[in-house]
Structures are given as C-alpha cells and as structure tokens.
Image (cartoon, rainbow, N blue to C red; front, side):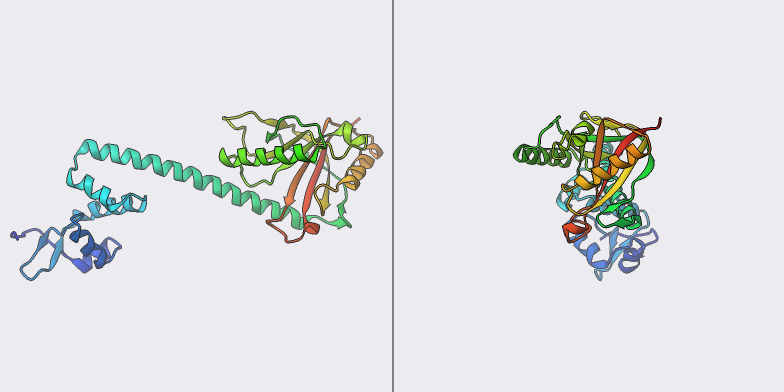
Length: 279
C-alpha cells in the first residue's frame, strides 16, 4: 500500500460514474487489467477521476469484440505507437460494421417501401388496371443473356445469380426479378427469359450491370404465381396498342410481395412494366 493524497472515489461511486458495476471492477482488478489507484488497510478500493477515460477505452475495446486477454496484453506493455496501431485496427472494424449496418438499413427501408406499394394496389381479379408511370433510371445486377425457356438452365442461372449477389453483398432488399424480350412476348413466347436481375441503388463498382432507362412505362400489377403472367402481358399490349404507344425493347418483372411478405403464392404481387413512347 502507499499513501494516497489525491481525491479518491469509492468503488460503488466509480462504478456509477462509468456506467458499470462493482463486480466488473473487481473482476478487472483480479485479472490485472484495471486496478484501483489505491487500496487501504481494510481492503477498500479507491479510484481517481483520471481513471475514467482508461476504463472507458477498455470498455470500448471490449464492446468491439476484443478479448480481455488481448486488452490486458496491450495494457501491460502500452506505449503511444502501439496505442495508435491498436486504435487504427479498431477503427477499421468500426468502419466495416458501419457499412454493414448501413446496408441493413437500406434493406429494411426497401422492404418497407415494397409493402407500402402493395398495400395501395387495387385489383380486378388477378390484375390491376394498367397505368402510365414515370420511372427514374435504375440499375440491375444481371445474369448473362439467357434467351431460353429451358427450366434447368433458368434454375441454375437464378441460383448462380442469387449466390453472387449475396456473396458480394449487393442485395439491398429487392427480390430477384427478370427481363424479357418484348418481341418474344408479342409472339406468345412468354417463358423465354433474357436475364434474371436484382435491383441495386447505385451502379456497383465491382461488376457489370444493366441500366433500366428513365422514362414513361406502362405498368400492370399481377397477383398470384410470378410465372403465370400471360394475362398481364396481354393487358399491357392491349393498353399500349389502344393508346397508340410504341413499346420498348424489354419488359421488366419485379417482385413486390414474395414469400417473406405473404404465406400463399396466390397473394404474391409482381410489377410488370414496359417502356413506351408517345406518337
């Protein structure tokens, strides 16, 4: 023991000051990680106000997942250069976690927006009325050009696509969708898919992408099986012809409500859109 002339803080008061508990302070003292500034003849522990920042930093490192043994190893041999290195490493972890949380926030916001869209749609049987909408430019991660109705090839393409988007952390909450060639649809070939796609908020830096052009689109919503969309295509083309519009090259199918939102396939919602030009 040594004589202690500085103002001191009892263990309970120090615990309250640092938003912790006495048991944690006792444990840290026992393992030699963080000890009181002074212990009197009766064994009572006392701390100084200057120790608050030390405890705070130790606690931050612990919350970041750094084991107490590693923190103690640093504390036992601490110096400015090692502290700088340690803090830079932890900052890297924080930056990565913030990026992860930002992506999760985006996913949640996307799902909320899709639910809201679905709640506003009015249906006549399985279909909504066709409407014209102005769409902004949008970006898609896409499979290779498929142009096939072969179920096996389509299935493997979807699986590869989903795996790639998940591993590269490109999924921002939109279920996968599809792009179909309008010429094929008009010829009655409704099962031939050009691409499977996943919408992203911004052009990705690590891979190629497709652009859905901004402009006016004829839009219909389908309730039920995503792949049984013949009636939806027919309604779209009838509307486009009746209003003297010229369809674009591709048709876009985007899931709005999938199995995450509803229990039954009969309640799935799909947005189907075709770019159009006025005469």
